[in-house]
Image (cartoon, rainbow, N blue to C red; front, side):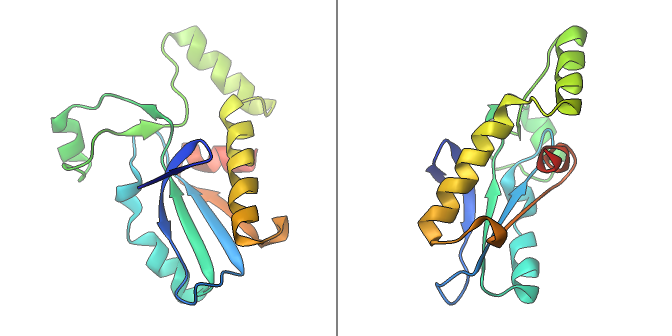
Length: 141
């Protein structure tokens, strides 16, 4: 797993070595990038010149081994999320912040995406963001 520009991620470079697109995938709450390891090959069948990054959420959940086993990821260090609420009021505050596009990790992800595009010499119109569950909610922002 790479660690650049503030995030850890699994990188799946295009076969040509000259990408014309960058796909950034964000996972949901309590996931790990390894849960989506088959996804990049499927995307690259349709878009062979796309570099794909499967980004790990920055907040570990201290998942038990039993929970990781149930998720089909027994060998990963932990399961992750992009942010975590604790008490009901914290969770509510985060939910409301989504409505107003004020989740701090989104700004960090924007910087990450800009840096990754620049490393590849690509412009914003070459970027595809998508996600699963909470990751999907963040891509909307």
